[in-house]
Image 1 (cartoon, rainbow, N blue to C red):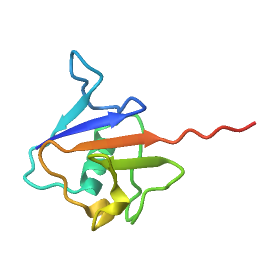
Image 2 (image 1 turned 90 degrees about the horizontal axis):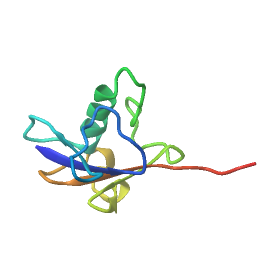
Image 3 (image 1 turned 90 degrees about the vertical axis):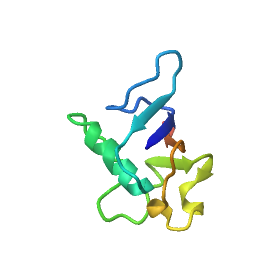
Image 4 (image 1 turned 120 degrees about the vertical axis):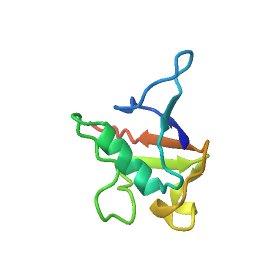
Length: 101
């Protein structure tokens, strides 16, 4: 299964496609949920520590990440983090940058 990734930051452990800024990941799995996908990204990021989803969490920390599947916030899908992904889906992962002084 190929899943494309769009992000406002570099995703460690995922290769960039040569002529573009796009990133993709191939997983030898017939089915995959958003949670499993984010857990896989965490594993591939090692030795860099990036935790996209906390174990047992029902939602992502809204102060850390915004995640969409094909442009739709993951919270809008039945199952949320347990929403199934399909071949060719695009997962958008954005780090929220907070300003302050």
